[in-house]
Image (cartoon, rainbow, N blue to C red; front, side, top):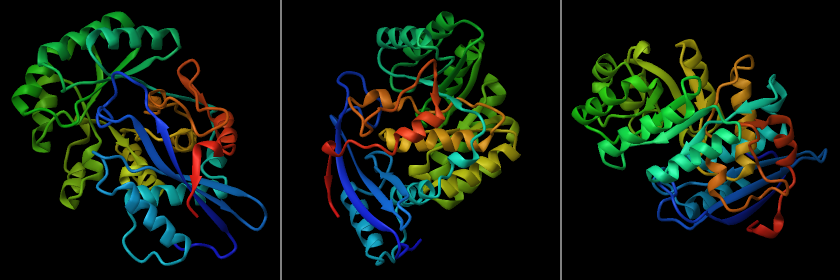
Amino acid sequence: MMQNNHVSCTLWRYCVPLCEGALPVPLAAATLREGLVLILTDAEGRTGIGEIAPLAGLHTETLDTAQWQVCAWIKGELHHPVLPSVQCGLEMALWSLENQPYSRVYHRLQPVNALLVGNRDTILRSTEEAVRSGYTTFKLKVGRSSLEEDVARVHAIRQYIGKTMTLRLDANRSWSLETALRFGEQVSSASIEYIEEPLRNLDDVPLFVERTGIKVALDETLYSQHRAERLYRLQLPKDVLAAYVLKPACLGGMKVASALAAEAITRNLLPVLSSVFETGIALSFYAALQSSWMPNTAIPCGLDTYKFLLSDLLISPFDVQQGAVDVETSWQNRMHLRYDMMKRIV
C-alpha cells in the first residue's frame, strides 16, 4: 500500500483517560488509552481519517513501533510487513477518503451489544442501566472469576433481561474442556446465543457443543500468529459455530475483516465486528462497516467499549442511543476532531 503523491498527510498522537473502577481485560491495569490519528487530504479537499491504536495484551506491536511504520509510510519508505494495527489505520484513512464503507450502508441504525464486566453487583447495575437505555443484546465476560460466580452471574442476568433479549458470553480461551463442560452444562438453560472461545484447545469445540448445546464464536483464532490455527476454523463443522467476531485492528485491516465476514455469511454464521477500545474515530467507521456487511440484517456488534473512555477525540462524541448507533450521524461526526487532545507528530 503506497502513498499517493497527490495526498497530504498529518499524523497525531493522542492520550485519553480511562474510567476508574472495573475495566475489561486487557485494560484492567491501565489508566490511559493511547494511539495515533492519520489524516489524509487529497487535491480536491476531501479528507480521510484513520486510527492506529495497538493494545498491549492483544497486539504484539507497540505504539512506538506502529508510529515508526506510519511515518515510514508517509515518506514512501515502508518496505517491511505492515503491522496489523497500522494496516487497519491506513485502510481506514484511505477508505474513508473514498467515502467507504458508508456508501454501501442500507440501514441507518446499527445495534450494539452491551458489554458487561466486573463483580456481580456491578454487572447487575450495568445490566439494569443498559436495559433502561434500550439495549437488547448483552455480552458478559466470563472465565476470570470462580466457576460458581460465573454461573450465578449468567442466571442473574438472564432472569433480569427475560427470555426475549439476547445473551452472549466471552471466555477468551480461559478453560480446559472439563471446566468448560461444567460451566456449559450449568448454564445451558439460560438461552445463550453463543460463547466466544471458551476452550484453550480448539479440538475440544465439537464435544463442548455436543454436551452443552451452546454454540461457539471464534475470535482469537481468527488472528492467531499461527497460520495453521487460523485455518483450523474451516475444519470445525459449521453447525458447532455461531459467529466470527472480527477485530479489524487485530486481523490486519478492513479487507481481511470483510473477507472473513463474507466467509461467515457463506457458512451461515454471524459476522460480528468488535473494537479494541478505540475512540469514536474508529468506532464510527466500524459501525458503517458492520452495517455494510449484511445490509438487510442488523447484527448487534461490539462497539460498547466506548463507555470505558472518559472522553472522545470527536467534538460530538461517539454515542449509543436506544442500544444502537446512528450510522449516518456518527459518520459525519467522525470528521470533526478535538485537536486540543492530540499532539502533532508529522
